[in-house]
Structures are given as structure tokens and as C-alpha cells.
Image (cartoon, rainbow, N blue to C red; front, side):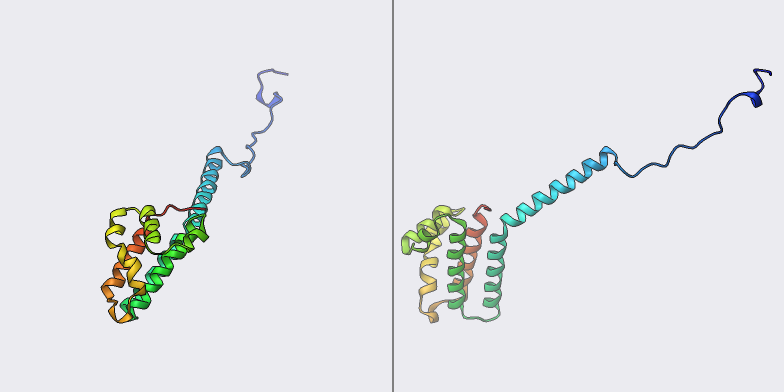
Length: 161
């Protein structure tokens, strides 16, 4: 037997590697899955925390749409005033205390918690006056301005759980 004869050597035939398994995934896929899960959780928390703001903005948009379509400005102003008070009650832990505020105390609360205190000190009379005025004396511009004030105040409030 010749040791250099290839036919006589104890060699095995060429074999292919096993197919690449789909499990466990590579580290990049784990990272991507973690990012997707974390992003989903953050998005869900943000949507849950901002649900009151979105509902208030939808209601305010329906009030403005009704006003533009010819609804009674006094009724729209009342709806905006009620919306603002309801929103304030859901955003503050002292709901009964807010529900009991009236007149200057209510206006002071709104001004303290708003983005721009001077606006409510200047135009805040609309919040106290327009919803309770004689319906014949409430103009469309007064109701629009009240809705704008409400929208600004709602936007200034931080989202809460």
C-alpha cells in the first residue's frame, strides 16, 4: 500500500453545512424587536395620557363647526364654557373644588393654570359673561373668541394619567 495514493487514504466525502436556522435570531433582530416593543409602549402611554385633550379638542371642533353652520352663538358659548369646566375637573385632583368655583374665583383658577395669565385677565370676562348673557346679545365673534380661549387653555394643560 502506497501512503501517497489518494484512493487508499481514509478520507470522507465533501459534506455541506447544515441549513441556517431561523431561531435564535441574530442580535440585530433582537434589538429591532426591543425597539418596536418600546416604541409601541411609549406610543400607547402617550395616546392614553392625551385622551382627554383629544376629546376636548374634538368637542371644541364640533362647537366651532356648529357655530359656522349657523347654530345659536349663545348656545355654542355655553357649550364651550361647560367643556372648559369639565376638562378642568378631569385634569385636577380637586374636582369638587373646581365644580364649586364661580365668578372671579373661577376666572382666577383658569388664569393661574393657563399659559398666558394676561390673556385671561384681559379677555377672561368673556368666560364669565358670554355664557350667561342674553342670547340676543351674544355675537358669533364673541363665541369664536371664547372657543379660542378655551382651546388655548386646553392646549396649555399638561397631559396626565
